[in-house]
Image (cartoon, rainbow, N blue to C red; front, side):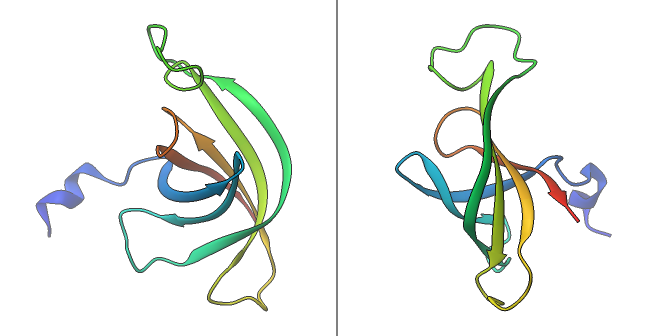
Length: 104
């Protein structure tokens, strides 16, 4: 048993997101480099969430506020597979993202 397995997995799942013009266009789970990439085909909803951050953040969005997107995405490796709905959160400014929920 690996000593790192004692800590369990981080929830929510961290993801690497590529975005364009303020919208997510592609994402993949981290830190696994060979995990499937997903291409965003539709943005269904956008909202701002308050986080439990105990003090105000110096960034306009991040720390105490999180930008969220409900998106529909397809696996880049299996474009014929059905699309799934995901919720992405930008936690502490550009570059720090979480995959919050996968709707089945």
